[in-house]
Image (cartoon, rainbow, N blue to C red; front, side, top):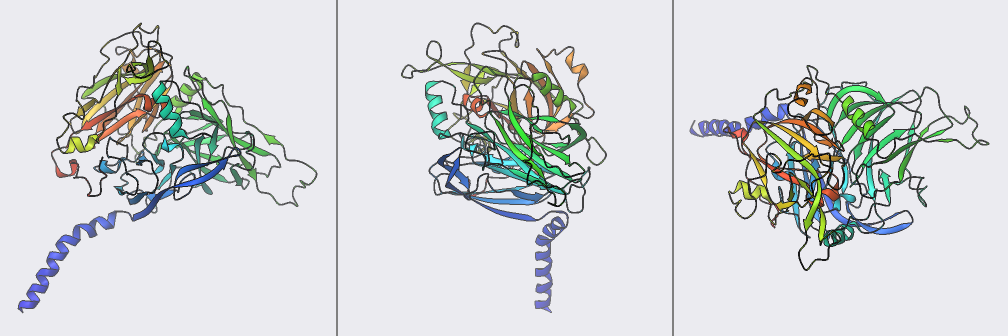
Length: 577
């Protein structure tokens, strides 16, 4: 009797602990394990061989596939001399900020011979994202697709495709990119531009010595293909088009959109776009180029080359006798490199699906309003530096005239353990300290300040942020990426934002929701988001050269009152600085 009672009590005790897990498992997804070995690999492109940093020797890196609701655990082991971190770009990281990945923001880097386990759950997201290194310029070769499928049995809100194909754009340098950016940061000059763009790691036939390194997509006639486009390029927004084909945009940044047709699209670094390609009803002997080239608005030099893949139709040789005929190659017509009007028109076509199943949860009211200028300026070099700018200055980039100084310890640890003194200050300006005609004639003094400054937001603050480009050194489009959140793009326009007139035209019904938005060249964009994720969240330009120059800042979101509104302590293997 006594032992039976003990057994019953033991069972009840075990059930008490196990039951929450069982209940959770019923509704939750699978746990998916990945191992990322960071190692050097010899790769040849454009007839030149070099050693690059890779994941598991693959370039581009391995595809991560999960479903909405899944837990993903990735063990990253560093076998190279460089410090490493990996960012899971666009993943909300709800209460898992320790796994976000930006170096010295949420973690110290993984040093040589060390490892770190990234552990997060994908909550309320489905679609195309990607992962990439988030330290220095190592994401040049350290990147790969992150595909989130809907929950089992949940269909897409568009026709089920015959096949799904990831298309990831990259940028290739013949020289070592770490050397390039380190030299540029010492001299204050602009770093050398890339030698090629790539599609799935391959430059394509329009470059010298590259015909064999071409991505080929073989398609069947009369089928629908879902192309998952990802811009993992370092410094260039891109136009993309497929010759003689129209595509339908159905999703951006892992958020469904109201479908619309287009021949050409624009995609900034950090953005993803899902498109449906309906192939022609009959086989064609022609091959169709899928081409991408730079959308460049700034004053600096840029890589003006074009990457291309080949779309070719499968056909039976009996149907088409191709022995005597060389197939014609059709090229798409892409906009001019500086076509800001096309870029603005394209971004204005994007609207959230805003259906019952996929509502647009736009904050209708706002607690805090911010106005941030984004752009370039100059910073004074020290006396022992020989900088290339006027009066021994170098180019810098800033938000509200503050060029961010990377700390030597991670902000999230400093915040969590209450040790912010000497690491960061909480006085990031909510508005420009000096007002001027932002897109007109620049002021005579274009020196910027520097510091490690953050904005503190109480949990659940409803934020409105206007990002305003400036014409200092030159107006330029800036793709701004916010970690830890999606935001709604409620308005955009050219010229200076008018706080009296422009808010009347804000779209609070079905604005596009995303994680990276292009601040228009010589214009502004307004976003809203709910600060419902405790932690420290990086916001920066996704043109890597501008990030290196300081166009970045961080938001500190404090804990809420309930247990599920607080950031848990760091994992035991969190790297040390």
